[in-house]
Image (cartoon, one colour):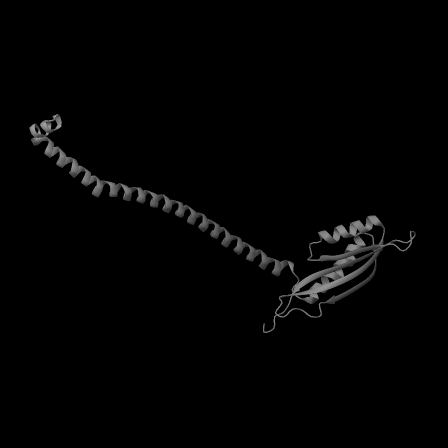
Length: 192
């Protein structure tokens, strides 16, 4: 008889319960502990993913809140622009350009020679804004031209410089400055 068989036959009473206990432990591990460990690891991964998703959602929420605040602020500023800065009608726009431009020319020591104004002939349908274009011609020396353009660019009225032309036909004559400007105004809507 071999040594292994002898040990098995003499210690059968101890080895069989040990073998059954080992098989039961393997079975419990395979059927209970391992699936719970996998489930726990999966739950941990899901918890991490959920935390990451929550942080992303909080960032998106903060971004959306900032966007809403920015839009509300832009709407307020646009309303202020329409009500306080932009001329309310074409007559007020005409008064701004017809009074302000000659005053700026006098302040810059330039001679005011001519002025032409006209509204856009075909405003866009349902447009909220109209446009008044004005063309002026001035005479003066170079420092006066610079002063006039500076004053025009920094005037608080809503006047946009579209084109500037500087010419001199003869060296003995003053510079001839032609400036085209535009200003916009609120149009009365049809049906208002």
